[in-house]
Amino acid sequence: MAVKEYFPEIGKIKFEGKDSRNPLAYRYYDAEKVILGKPMKDWLKFAMAWWHTLCAEGGDQFGTGTKTFPWNQGEDGMSIAKQKVDAGFEIMQKLGIESARVFVVADNVALFSARKGLDPRTSMSGQGSFGGYAQIRTISGGINLNF
Image 1 (tube, one colour):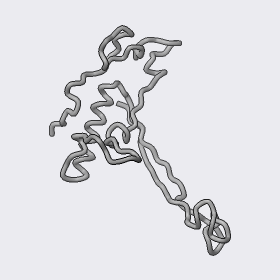
Image 2 (cartoon, helix red, strand yellow):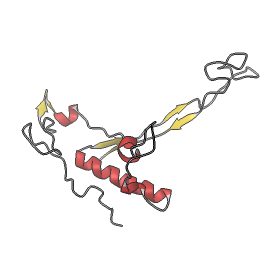
Image 3 (spheres, helix red, strand yellow):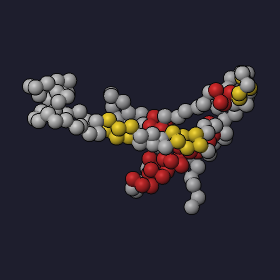
Image 4 (spheres, helix red, strand yellow):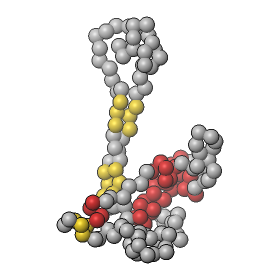
């Protein structure tokens, strides 16, 4: 199955020097320039916020989104997710991002207490920093990928 190219007009972004007039060129970042014995790409690793780059369509606290992305269009969630991954890896390759980090974070997964009754993280009246409700359980996960 062929992968759709979402940024066909953009090639790999390269270093062109500080006098470059190309808006899609690195002017000061030369990945191969050696600084203190290591190439610049080892000192300054690029990152991309997946949500802000590929998911957020311009919405904020004042209203709904102002743009749509072609990778967010589709018949079902799985096809949209695959398209988003294709678009994400394409732009990361063009920017020179060499790795991706996926992670696991768990908060409030379990509570072990001999105390009976109200949640021990709240006051005896049931009030406290969480208004009488137990803290929310959150679980996030991930992996490190190098490519």
